[in-house]
Length: 128
Image 1 (cartoon, rainbow, N blue to C red):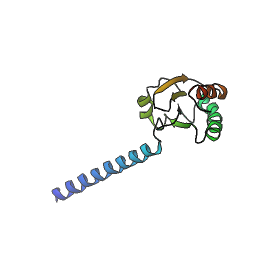
Image 2 (cartoon, rainbow, N blue to C red):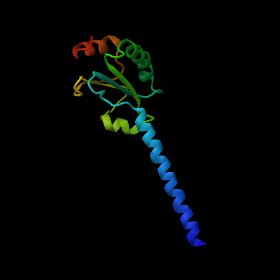
Image 3 (cartoon, rainbow, N blue to C red):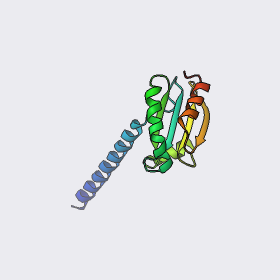
Image 4 (tube, rainbow, N blue to C red):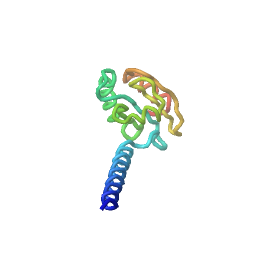
């Protein structure tokens, strides 16, 4: 009887671990590759609940529409995906990181960043 209870407990533990790993894999798949291969990329690392990040949200949405197919613009909520803050080495939010079309980091900015300034960086990186 004791072996059976132990076997059931171990099986349940393994199933929970597998479910957690699958959930992490699904979350990891939700983030597109950054930088986007062959494309100028801006990643905006912030949180849906931080005030300056909320101010950035409409700017990001406008840029996504205006630069569709010409530049990749990715938002990552680092309060929901804490491992991404460490991955990108950020210390404050929002942080915008720019990559050239070869995937090399071309610049960073911390804090609210207006649309005009972002457009200037895109132009410097060759996005028309």
